[in-house]
Image 1: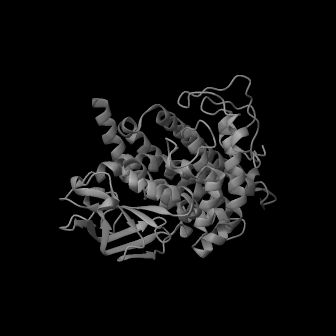
Image 2: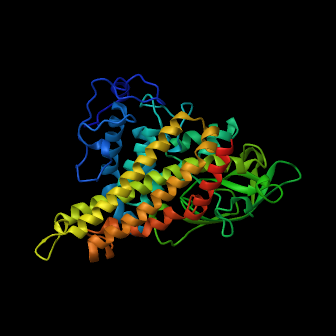
Image 3: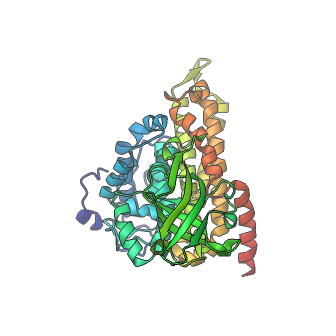
Length: 451
């Protein structure tokens, strides 16, 4: 479907009238094949006549819009940006804003007050499609460079900041003019958020906070204009944490790009705050309530990472099928060797199962409010993230084996596989390491069963 000329009016006129949390297949709607139809290269509902209770015609149209954007604006340049360890983030964000879908990255509800919604009814399956299609680029660095900071840095501002702060910050972020990121992790506190040490002491005048401390592994930090920063304003533990919006132009803010194993172009940053004076008007929500805000943010972040990781696993699978169909060894194509077909089947089994689990969690996200979802879906989302990152790691390894030496070279036929193999740890650790997620899932499930 060519959607390049689709304007707001004819888009919304084609969106069916429906409850976005109780999706049904429209009568007479018959899905058509979409994409290259490489075996397992896309989710099941991309195949002809494959109907699903989760997707309707608006999802199909949105999918086509995002795919065209990714193929034109991102995919031709991934290797170049990765090698440069930099990318034109502001330019891409501006283009994404012009396409209308940029606000969808922060999750539902659509922030109507600050950004127009050109798509009509919009639910979490639309957002799932967005993250999934963006991940087809096969680069965690490019994907995080485009969406990583915005997806987790802006929601606390949208949900808890003062109206004055929102009015000042949100419109310019949604236009692509300014970039925001989240700064929680420190050299000495990652998943153990309750023990962060970065301090914010209120001046006796009550007009500003003085911030001192360090933040590490901060996605987009090197090119961000705003930092949503977790700071300690009270005593030890989770009850003494607050959120401040710190602007890069404030004296005492220093950023340095970090050299990491993967996600090279995402701008992973080490940030130092030295006697940074932050106006009290930049406090997000209530003082010493920041831990709760962080927890509300985590489920959506982990779900988003799971969607991305599973598509990266699928990219490894798709690339393997295509390569095995043309590479010849011992007088026949790789795909004609039973051991290669076994590898492809194992990859497909895990990717498709993970996708089904993702749809299940996404459907529940549509049904539940944010507070209830935080309680009831915390364990499920944690397990989903582990399932997706383990599947990603398995598929990256198997794809590298199928590609052989071609996956050991940066660039060329195995470019995506080599790059994604480096990106695996960026998904298995950030957002909650696999070990922490497994323990959380069990504890959360026991707690909810008692309820």
